[in-house]
Image (tube, rainbow, N blue to C red):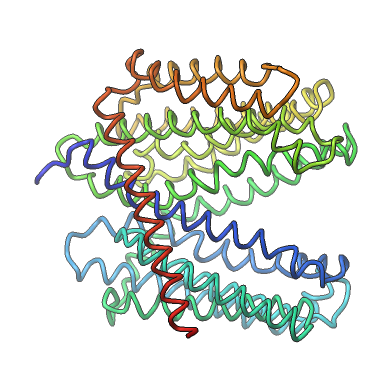
Length: 508
């Protein structure tokens, strides 16, 4: 079998991850812009009811697509022919659709009880059913979009995501702003976008489907994907417990500072880590049968940690002027939370890249074990650190817990597949980031905007030089990666321009 070069592997991954990332950024950006539009027309109490109703949608996702979507990635690469691929895809799609339909029907019979449980009022039972139908459509669409990811159809993914998002938002604006339908308009708008997006996705992957399913494959998929369910439940429990501990020790103000810092740090997750994790499994398994796939996995982990670490450094320092512009003075201390949360997100987001053996060898039982142990350490330390250091203490506890999770998964993975990760180079990179980040955080000229300008100048001038000088990157691969990023950004901008051009012509 022909071998792929490391540079070719990284260029291909960067190409698709950039488009996935920019699509995610566009979706998040437009959503944030329009959020104040319809929230200004919805009373807080009504929006609270909407938020409670949305909780029911997590049940369908948790038990269907969140289990089968990652398993589809693994099973797809067990075959080299179209028959096997189509059987796997059809099996995952049919069982997801069947389970979603089953849960919707069962919950519909108890819709009044569900509405009463979530909102305290039976009057919202119809909206509860609509929310469930939307969740079912999104679960099916998640499987369809997983096919896009496994086939690396990043441009098609961007187009479909844009159409779905635009349809949903325009429908919401019409129903909420013009028809004044309140939260019912938001629910119906979400349903419209979910159904249209699912129909378009199904139409596009129609040639990847077959008139057959495999019960053996569905057993393999659930054996692989089932551990994701307790891991997701644990993540929810950690999030809720973190807020509770902060509220007990620091009051509502402490929770607000932590939440704002987390929101800023999560930009790193939304714009870089999530898009990368969307395409990484397909890239990892596409080279699994090569002579030495470990070199690709090692390079991917090194690129991931070095790039996200650099962005975390920038985000941590820039949080100060950002908070000065967009937040009240009482929340300025949230900048102290950002560095720890950003590093925590990096550690958690990279756990799969340093434990590829668990995925490739179907040893996913380690996922909930590692996360449960890391979570217990996080919560135990949090009780101690929050009392002494407030919100930054909670952020530090989360970082230590996520580092523990990643360490356990890495050690467990080596039992099944040894991959040499260049932790030495990664530590060198983070030492550079820590030095410049600390300097940027404590740099003070009396004007935070001048401080930020000086820091950015120093960071972009000296950090790349030091990364090459200390051997973290070869100068050739650094320049190649830089050119690749620039090309992908230009391609995405061109793609978006074409989309808007086509939309304008249709309107005319």
